[in-house]
Length: 569
Image (cartoon, rainbow, N blue to C red):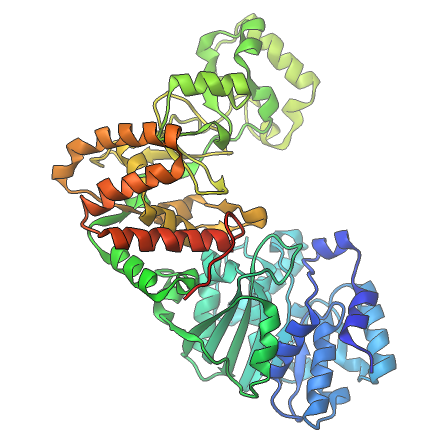
């Protein structure tokens, strides 16, 4: 019998082509587990909506055969890529004698149950790519399929979401869906209608997460989803966390159609976006404390105090940003220059000062933005510099040619604070005391007009263990242990909220934390912020602070940053 590993080795597309199609081929053990869970009778029928190298088809063949069925007539598969289809289908027809008509070379969204009949189980690993990379016709058709199921998805949704929704339409009543999905299902805003559709469609849905990556070459973590009992919703959500995918073999040896040890999840809160699946990876006591603090009037969303947005977009940073020396040599008048901080590496402490800007400018992390307002009269020196830009093709770059005039950078706002959005340890929120500006390599924070807190105060509140944990929950991990925090995610981060009587103390606390962070390091500043803000101001105990800090460290280690991962209770 041909093994899945053999098929995988012979039919995997070239690396660049696979990446373009969002194809990340699944380990045989994972495919066997999903087939074992989803296929429960020799009479079951099964489909893989994007079969690639055929690892799921092979796993389904073995499972149906073991259950005494005839896999040659009960397995269906769809594959878009012609070359991959030809190699995989050829091998399966030769070795397994599968019905050739059951293996379809087409866009999955051109396939419906009228063609194949509804199946007992869907298993697979749909592509993880944004649908704007597809042709306009294919994109419209895919979104029409999901809309027909009552699921409205934003146009920038990843293809896995559309694959999942359309797959459900191919299932028989009582059927099962077992898929590999990106961790976006747990945190992306566009995933919420997908989660709600799962809840409404199935009796139960279990999410299996892993502390080590299923795909070493994929920057994002993945999750296995097991949805049972189609057309028997609304149902429940559960989550089970594993140290390593190899432990799935122990689960399948149980011989049960459920995953033992799963914990119940607040389905309504997850589907509505009020809670995230990642919270269920925390120890119970830490999760309960965090949920209590989220509901408390002594904490606030950052978005209730300030707006978070991206910085300006020049379209050609190297042209529009000048070092102080370049600005002097080219005799650019000061009225056309705005001090800018270009990268998060320039930020330290709780305040970005004029001294910090001068140091960052010396190190190449800051400088001046060439800022020309529409209709502004230009001196000869500026006109000469713009001619250099035109000669070098700067005016023809996409962002420049789509604005008028091409050299007038829009949306240049002086923020109250800066926020790094790609971070290893944790994102920095730093008060802007240098009256500087920032491009879209940083987020900008502007305090609401009626907010009673200063930028220094908010920077202090950001430095607590509560916020460090909230950042890990609201943000999402990328490759190399990095954490990315989008503006909407940053606005959902929780900070402690002091009483009016505490306000006079905040500026002095900010000064102390700024000095401590610069001289003694991040950990010392967080410990002091916990003592001054969480304990003294909102009444947490030292053990509460320790619990929050430990939980933040566990999630940080889970995304691959810092010390080896501790066991999660």
